[in-house]
Image (cartoon, rainbow, N blue to C red):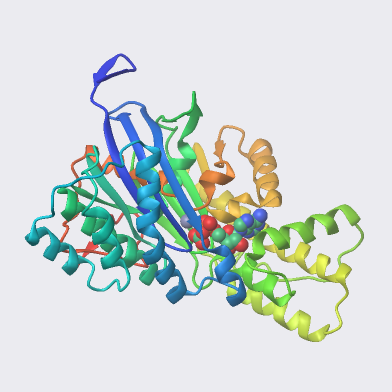
Length: 409
Ligand code: KG4
Ligand code: ZN
C-alpha cells in the first residue's frame, strides 16, 4: 500500500510488451494512483533491443525479418526485464498439460517461439505481476502478431489478465509523463490536448477532449513522415535510419547559409484538412536527383535542408490550424521524428510566439522512440477501468486508430 496525494492506494505491477516495428521491448512497472488524480510509475525492469542494424541493408524495416527477430528475442528480453525487477525465480513444479497445450495453440503461428517459450516459462516461478499489457496496433502486422501471441501465451501460463494497448496512446501518455525522483509521474494535462504523432510507422493528429478519450482528426494518406525521411536519405546514399542523417546534412547547410538552389513542394499545405501526404514530396526529390545526377556533397546538404524545411512547414501548418480549430491547451509531439532538432526548434519557437497559452510536451528521446514503458503506462489506465482483452480472440491490427482499443477475431 502506498500514500499518494493523500489517498491510500494499492500498488500494482504490470508487465508490458512492445513489438510494433523494429524494437522488441519488455518492461515491468509498478503503478499507483491514477483514479481521478496523478499516477506514479516506477520502472522495475526495462529490456529493449533495437533491430536497426539488421534492417540497414534493406534501407528500411523488412517485416519478415522484424517478425523473426521479435520471436528470437522476446524470451531473453522477458528474462532480462524480470531479472532486473528481481522477479526471475526458478520453479520446480511441472506445468499442467492443459496449460502446455493452450500455450502451444496460442503460439502456433509463431514458429521458433514455442520451444524457447516453453523451455523458459515452464521453469519460471509465476512473477508477482497483476496484468500483462501488449501493443495490439497500429504498426507492422506480422511484427505486432508476435507480441500479441507472446502476451496471450504468458497470460495463459501465469493466469493473468491481458490488456490491449493502442501504440499511439502509449506515445501520448509517455509524453505527458514527467520524471520525478526516478519515477514517472502522470498528471492530467490541460485539455483539450492535441497530439501530433510523427514516426516511421505512423503520422497522425489526435485530440484528447476528456482524459483518455480520443478522436483521430488527421493522418497520412500515403507514406509516414519518418518513411519519407528514410526514403529521401536512401536516395542521397545515406544509411538507414535516414532521419538523423538528413537532419545532420540539413544542419550543415543551415550553418553554411547562402541561397538554396532547390525548391520542393509543400504537399497538402493548403488542403484545408488535417491530413498529410508525403509520397509526392519523396517523388519530387527523386526527380530533382534525376535532373542532377552528378550532385555534389554541398548540394546534397541543400536537398536535405529543403526536404526538412518542407516536412517541418507542413507539420507545423497542420498542427497550427488544428490548435486553432480545437482550442487545444496542450500539444504533444511524439514518435521517432520528434527527435529532429529543427522540428523541435520550430515548434518551440512557434508555440512561444503564436500560441503562448499552449503547453508543448515533447518527450526525451529515450521515451519518444518505441519502448515498452509507454505501453505499460497506457495499459495501467485500461487495467484501472477493467478493460481487459479476451485471450482467445485478441488480434493484432496494423491499422488500429484511436479511440479503438483493439479488435478481436
Ligand atoms: O517512433 P519510431 O522509433 O518508430 C516507428 O514508429 O517507426 O520512429 C522511427 C523513425 C524513422 O523513420 C527515423 O528515420 C525517424 O524516426 N527519426 C528521425 C530522427 N530520428 C529518428 N527523423 C528525423 N530526424 C531525426 N533526428
Ligand atoms: Zn511509435
